[in-house]
Image (cartoon, rainbow, N blue to C red; front, side):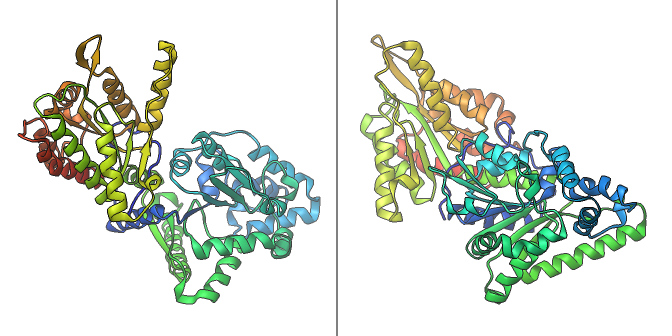
Length: 499
């Protein structure tokens, strides 16, 4: 399966150490399956209140607590919180409830790391019962054009050039008077919001959902999932949710803990009726770790090549071009995507091999596998050209997860000098968290980078991966022909992509 590109890595430089994260085989299996669905653009997210609470918003219980206090109810003893909202409505009308929502949700908060990771992944469909704007804010921060829908009429309109849709099935904080809050609202939902039921039902059939921060106590979702289950029975699509495992320290006594464990186990078994696979984590930060590992796995299927050559060093130009042609073809044949600025003397052969491989093996479209962006040459102002090229480099490098460095020289005023552009690309790749693969034996700037990496190897690689360290070290040893490097480079890329 082919995995396309995405920008960014969870703010962890160079590599992320998962040694403190308990990753089970079940977690790893989820990550692989989820990556496969991402490849096919089949993923959707369903976000519950738990995703927003970590940003500082109150959860549903705390939102209702002041209202329950006025009713002289102990909200901690109430399980039907929608019922509590209805009781308050019966006695006081809607205005006070809407004001309570505004007081707690209208204040601006910053998206969490989980929001940011999800927004950077190639996910186009987001469903949520939350009223806040964290999802759309994080998507916009990632440069996406977001089409937000929370009224029936919104479903009939399409925002131009959108690449993400956020369905806010319970409303938006800008319109608290129409938010779904009380029993009345829920009872009328199937009638008043029928188009949302139809839309969500269709997505549950055609997309693989990840439910995050959701407790599965929402009657609207229960109704919709039950309809899908009745129609498709055992042929339902597989979905996933993540729960924090009950821990004894979270409860006042052993009896409460035991009851919570039993309730969670029963819920997990019940969700299995809807083909819902539940992942349990020990702490909430584990969810972030899992999402980051998904993002890293996705990014590392895209390889960026940094290279330029006026002087081909120890090899003939034809040998280098043949090597680059074969390398591009081999990467595509191994289902990697390529990102390149098509460097002088380097890029054309590399891209040509990739294109031939696409047409020969994958029967796909070039744009699905290649991110080709030749540098704009005709900018007379040197300062403007440098500024433009730097911005351009960030965009190209940011589309990948692995960076190859090969040769790196240019002709300047009649002399062959090391490529300062490659050095800048190396620095940007480090900043963006790409895995670094310098082909040191190709000489020039690539050799300098290889030497810098090997001097401080723990800065760039997980030193516990002895096989990877040895393989990168091999790239500094001279070879008779550059063709001999292909298997070595592919071996390293495969090792890195599996981390």
